[in-house]
Length: 225
Image (tube, rainbow, N blue to C red; front, side, top):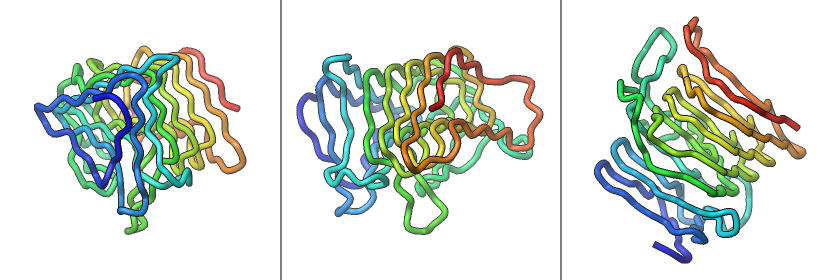
């Protein structure tokens, strides 16, 4: 697919399905038609190979932070939740299970992708979406040169899993720039930049879920401003 696209509602990529967007594509959500998000379910794959000069941009037409749900990806890589749980239910309002034993899970490739004005709070007041949400995503997935811009929640959140992410920018997000929980253990992350403008919470929120994990993520080179 190449060109301009509109998201209407929760668009899901089901297990066994691969969806590809070419460099330079623009995908626009519309808060007026309800909750919008691009969701990759476990077993589905999203391929977005943008370039430095032709990034793939996901935005919302009003340009108001918190207008939609951003990119949400599910896999079956390991998690470790509170009480040593190996599966949990997502907090994005979709109530999907996550957690598994496939450390090499591959949800696709996101390269030179920018998500704007996401981080929607769902109407029940307890659920929330981020710019990028990664549930149990594994090391087979490529996350590189990603920007989360002016969302109302976290820029990037990792819910367990083993995935690595390089060259991330979290700019102007209202909550935490980078957030992880449920025993995320990516070992080869590098070059992260967070810039908070006006409204912002923590540069990093790190939750161990009351577990004394014998592993940890590794991030080489992070700047918080």
